[in-house]
Length: 104
Image (cartoon, rainbow, N blue to C red; front, side, top):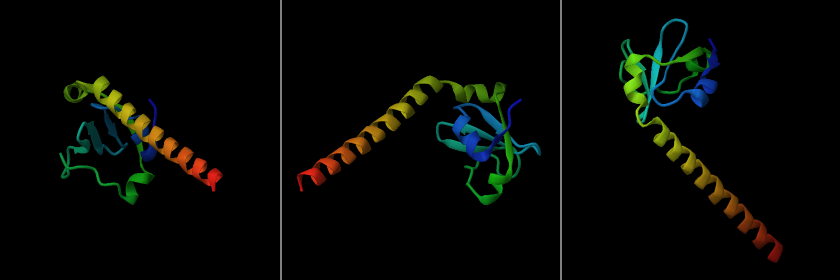
């Protein structure tokens, strides 16, 4: 069983997976975002607040989360494409700025 800090958990959790703290607070990653599961905040979007950064998290899947994982590969491919496009756009802009500086 691997444990993650909040930031690490955000980097590793995949669509349809859940993450839980040792005291049982649980979140589910959906295509809409990260949602609380159970408790008084059930179904609410997770708001990033200071107390979350001092928790450790375990990532897992269960039967209830499997329906959210449908389309995971397509969703993750789109995420990667968007990230690559943003990177390439920033890289292009930086090259244009450097080129303009050399010409001045």
